[in-house]
Amino acid sequence: GVKVAVVGVTGAVGTEMVSVLHDRNFPLTDLRLFASARSAGKTLETPFGSKTIEEFTVDSVAECDVALLAVSGDFSKEYAPQLAERGVTVIDNSSAFRYDDDKPLVVPEINADAIGDAKIIANPNCTTAILAVALQPLHAKFGLKRAIVSTYQAASGSGAPGMKELEEETRNILQGGQSSNKVFVHPLPFNVIPHIDKFQDNGYTKEEMKVTWETRKIMRIPDLPLSCTAVRIPTLRAHAEAATLEFDKPVTPEAAREALSGAPGVKIVDDPENNAYPMPLNASGHYDVEVGRIRQSIVFGDHGLDIFVCGDQLLKGAALNAVQIAECVVS
Ligand code: HSE
Image 1 (tube, rainbow, N blue to C red):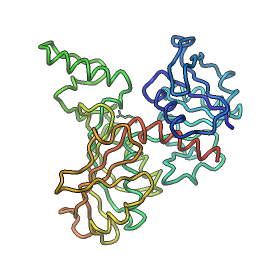
Image 2 (cartoon, helix red, strand yellow; image 1 turned 30 degrees about the vertical axis):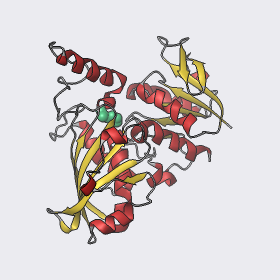
Image 3 (cartoon, rainbow, N blue to C red; image 1 turned 135 degrees about the vertical axis):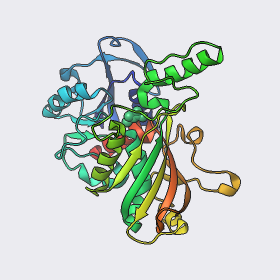
């Protein structure tokens, strides 16, 4: 068995990590939950029963074999190397190490082989992990050449405070109050915000560039032309994405469905006659990435597809993927 630490357990992703470890029957001998001094000593109700939250220290976490980090990039940058030095395998959900050449960035369905004997493994950006699961089977069959992506990202991408703000501000507006916002750049209820994370010199946001950079690294297509518009919408916890794809080889919607059916982590939801397609309300709480609206692209013709995908931001987009990496590490 394995001793596992979840660090940042009071956040939305940390909480889900504990649930996923339980749900997937992870081979644990010990599970320890860590957070900042503010939460230390508090009791957390988990699927494993009531557990006491411990204050994070390198010495305590170093008693574990694997540490799942659901903390800020600055925290990860400081402590992940110290933990790795002490022999802990660190799976880090921040962007601190994702672009380091010597650190694997892993979606197990795609590049589990990149893990090797790495002591620090990066968990991807949620939007990227969800998209890549759908792109990989198509890439394997038809060779991905170019991609144009638009995202519809849920409030959970900003963690528990984001979800709380969406719920409270929706109620507030419906009761005639003045809407306000702290977590999001603008009020989110009844709105869409084409701005997630900071603007870069090239006019794209960092969230958009993460999708470009991380997809290239995970799928091993180093110069893939992939352009993204990342948008926050007032859904709670599943991200949706529209993708227009061009391939090296000719493709048809039927051949695409064949490539996707049975692919790991993919669930085809594509029955327009019965109004069935991927949607956040259905994808929430589920492990699979829903893929649908599969059609020949008018822009790219017989080498092109348009698709729509939807995945739980906290699960495949974060906690599930991290636990899957941990499963690879201990297997
Ligand atoms: N940055 C993502 C979002 C969350 O804000 O939706 C996790 O990668």
